[in-house]
Length: 99
Image (tube, rainbow, N blue to C red; front, side, top):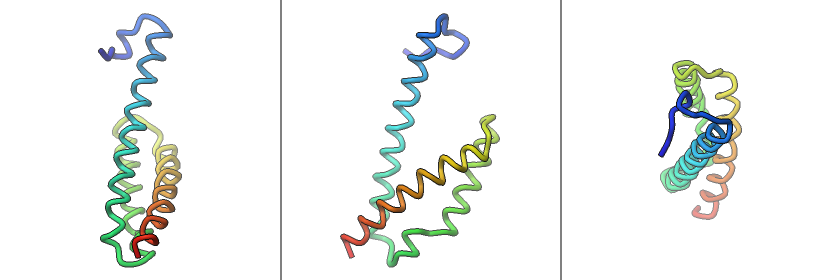
């Protein structure tokens, strides 16, 4: 059972909770990746896969969500830039195999 941060009574408990959160985040990124791959057949060319306008809009949304969560929007933008670039590269490979 998950504990709130202020309910933890030791560093070990805090680390255990952080590990559980990280595990969930990674699992969710894996689910996100499956949607990225599922989108490939709907795209007609390499530019559609890269979708620079969609990327800019998505990044702006994530930065706003970061601010609302009390996080540094620049950090979140960098994380998503790296993550999404990897996903785009993988989606391009997937798209090219299907084309």
